[in-house]
Image 1 (tube, rainbow, N blue to C red):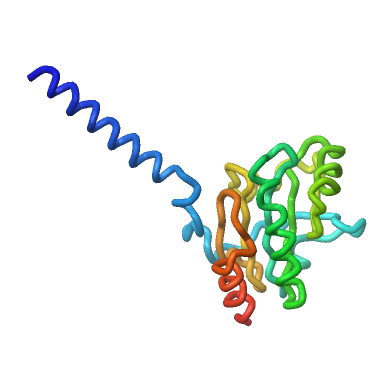
Image 2: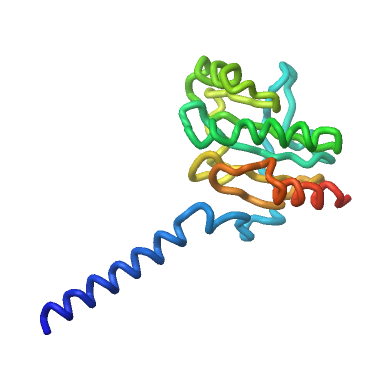
Length: 176
């Protein structure tokens, strides 16, 4: 009787731990509806040697991707982000990568080693744009519509050039 009770208790704990784990996994949290429709936090950037702000990109769909050179999942999704950039660029959209690296030389090395073709920005002195967005893990991506509103938040690495993602962007880019 005592052994059966202990096994039952352990079984209940295992089920509870499994439920908590499922809700904590990034794949469960994709598209977090709680931030959809909020205005994207504005911030200064200087990706091409010219001072600008995120708000200057209104009218474009922006795929705002937070990443770091030391992040294996970021390396994993970089080729798909390059492909996505090529797919959406002609339709007034862009990928904007924000590196959270503190080491600028590691950032530059990553860009070269991974053959990054989308626009990127890093400024270790300007601490932590990602905190303003509530980013808790990287890679984390915010899809910002043409009006500067967050359409979707995506946690974790993605296959950005998958048929499902391309269909999502086709629909988003078809909106005015």
